[in-house]
Amino acid sequence: MSFRTSPACPCCHPQLRSAAHRIDQALSRRGFIAGAGTSLVSLGLFGPVAARAAVSPPTPPIVFANFLLFDGRSEAVRGGLRLLIEGNSIKQIVSGDVTPPDGAQVIDCGGRVIMPGLIDAHWHSMFAALPVPALFSADIGYIFLAASAEAEQTLMRGFTTVRDLGGPAFALKQAIDDGLTTGPRIYPSGAMITTTGGHGDLRPLSDLPRSPGGPLSYMEQTGAANIADSADEVRLRVREQLLQGASQIKLVGGGGVASPRTALDMLTFTEPELRAGVEAAADRNTYVAVHAYPPIAIRRAIAAGAQCIEHGHLIDEATAKLMADKDIWLSTQPFVGTDDAPPLTGQSQTNLLQVIGGTNTAYSLAKEYKIKTAFGTDLLFSRDVTERQGLMLTHLTRWYDNADILRMATSINAELLAMSGPRNPYPGKLGAIEEGALADLLVVDGNPLADINLVAKPDKNFMVIMKDGKLYKNTLPV
Image (cartoon, rainbow, N blue to C red):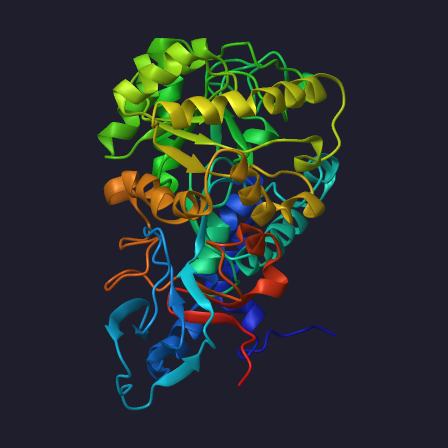
């Protein structure tokens, strides 16, 4: 007895067979995460979604009424306003009791505060929620699904935008942007680029020795990090990330906490190697952020033309003054205790304690010299730790008042995002509540300008979460 293929069988459709072949190639060549976006598009699975979107009626306007406004820039809230959302942007902010447009949904905020969605300037979408052993041993599909679930939790904590500073987040970003999963806007760097033995080089020793131009390690194939040991290799790796859609580039200038075979005092790239990466990014009209802790690493990055330093916890006064004089951004994180990281041992624990010990100096010097300072969390490898994302903002009360803290996590962080220029994946104003800005906002049950601790309990205190004009949470009483 023989089986005959039914013409109606979708499994035998030529398009599906071709796409399945492309999936096999993508899985073997780049790993699931890197190949998923292109392969699923080729399957046509996104087609019905796009078709439904095309025939869906337009979203009716939304009017927010009876609220106090923190616009992301001011020292105080103001009332007596109405806020009109049309599509994905803020159409009008007007005074008085204005008649809403026909068909508009009116949301009475009950006197609560509206503020911009929060922005985390140093996040790792793929690595935030899973412990290191799982990232090394779990099926890559599981890792992707865990990152998708964590992305939704990130948004539910009120962070409507993140700048991803290392990891294969391109497919997750596309899935969020296409409405297939829920999460924040992602400004992706792609793989962090490091040297052999540098921070981010977590290859097993069995992968050594490395031959320049030789086969990529599994870590590199999946897009977690890339190894580059010459200026030419740096250019290549930078261009690869930009080809995939990176909005900015992450270069590693020294050791890091999460890499147990590195120390914070060490250096990785030479100045010419860093300069090659900076020039390659500048050729695409975007910028490089350099991971660096000690003064010598920061100074080398600045000499190479870098416009943003990540971390900088071991900075000294002379280097802080140099950053201020050169108008260099400091994107740092308020690590004040071991609770802000998962349990660590050995060299990683030593590195973390050095970071914690330098936090006060870094923020004090940044404030004294008026360095442009961005807020990020860099929370990694634990779902329990990532829940502290909003709590990390409250640590800043050691150096800043509440208005400065909220500005840092909204309009100031948005200025850093805008440095991506034409590589910006979300053209439009972020981090502010003003006419023409993208409609990312929160309704807070209380006034965070008076009590910053409200942001540490988003489940309770964020009554409304809106991103891109869409309501993802609304627990206001009707």
